Image (cartoon, rainbow, N blue to C red; front, top):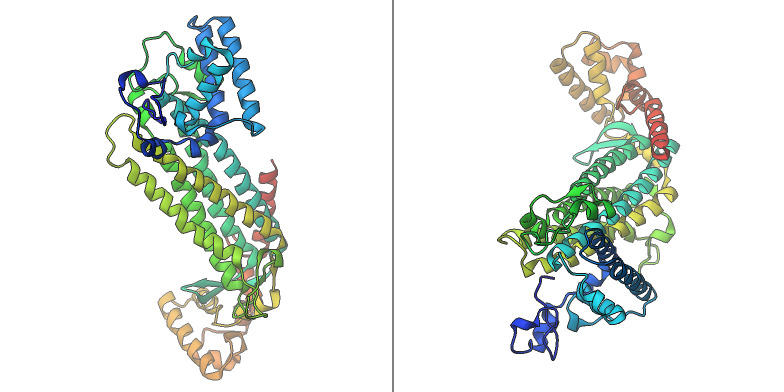
Length: 468
């Protein structure tokens, strides 16, 4: 991707004047990047069109040359989209493939397109343009998943289930409330991608190889043509920076971490031991030997792909950690992990967004599970505090009450009033209003609480926000 290229059998005319012998055939294949960077063809042509327009504006190219270049690039884009373009490893990368085809089509004017730029700033521009569009796609899929979560939360706003800490039953919550926690995680992901997009949306074009160019270019004009918010202020940094790629992969890794957590819960909830949810058949597979099995393959695969994206993030961090300024051939290795991270992320988001509307809650199983494990113990402690008992004393009283319920093999709410009063005289008949599951969730009626009316109001507000 740098200003050095290789071809088989001859020296590349773009840089060959310095060389007296042809590059080894294996080295030509080894150093070529066209096999994967041709994915940047649209962005490469878009950047070249803006560059040519700027050169015409500045009087570096004539109007006629600019028109020929624009027409030739448009025709090349049509060839690429139609699958008729012949990519050559001998020309090393997407840039030289497009430029060679342009020169073949329009002659001398095609050779002038590269005036005032280098492949170093060209590829940096291409990747930023590509990632800007990629982030827009990612944000669209996250929003679609958020919409599915909110719809399900609105439907299940009053469905009681156990809330867990340490995977032990802790307090009763509602399923809708749990789902809205997922939404909040994704909302933070949206913020990270929005920030990432804003930081990468500056133009390296015109930085040339590393120090700028002697031609009287107008970088602001090119940046405006390409929809950038400004220009990279230092050419040395502009051509060597890949922070935006690392930042994208870091944000993607966090999304996949979130999706992996969602997956883990779905896998547990879908198991016979929990039985909280039913995953739609189309997102599951069976066993080749055990006919009763319904395996949650999609969540399991998303959980597995998370490690793959983590690997790409560390690959890019390692790629950049020892590079001196400015551009180095190492940077050719940024695209494959970046592209695969994007593809993996989009596929996982799509799978979840498609699956969410068809997720079915098994309400009875959730309710039975919430009734186990003395999930209203904290409510009893709060009740005692309101009766004037110090919290630490209340904590001990509840502990003794739980032990009593364990011995009686019943829930706290099933203990007789006399049994509870034997533990503490502060307990009165109204205690049962707080010991039921419904009473517990309804009591947490504040912003951020699990009370059904709070969950419903939050789900409806988020639904309106997503539609805005």
